[in-house]
Length: 224
Image 1 (cartoon, one colour):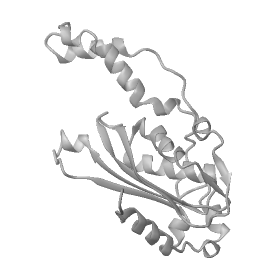
Image 2: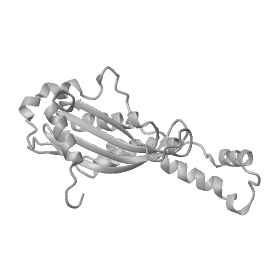
Image 3: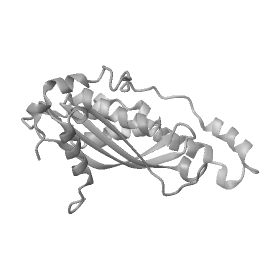
Image 4: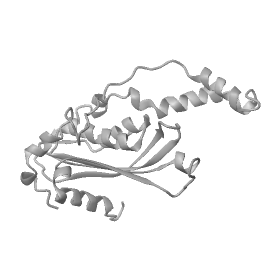
């Protein structure tokens, strides 16, 4: 597995560092946690009154509180602090090959209809001088998935955050998802999926690096 760190060059990392433009778009600050909001159970109660014929029946009496707890969890990413998630788990290591964490399951809510979308994310980076604890990458994915999202933004935010934290030579993220807004309503296509990617630094500039990433993601060995 040849990542060719020297050929990638430090300039590739510089071009895609967080806080600068990526592919012509400004990087959005995504790491500031949000404070706890007001209770939403009363709003859910109002919604039930408008939607159902008997909002006071036994099965619905505690529904507003249940929905509030569910939504607080499903949008908990707004209140997560990335610095606390990482918790200093960055390590100086002389390692110049690709690091890949694949098949990271995630669940999110589409911001257009507040219906779920779910799937798997594959994250890779090419270290320059530091690596991050492997368990931190899925937690970073959850921090951005547990928000009102679109798949394209979710993919880009994960990539930009990894770039900002580790400052590697490059980051690659591939996201595969199915959307309930397509499956339950609208076109009602149950077997359609969407794929998005974000390639920064060496992953954008070097075809060999991208190809290696794709080969590793597509490989299915024993236990994977």
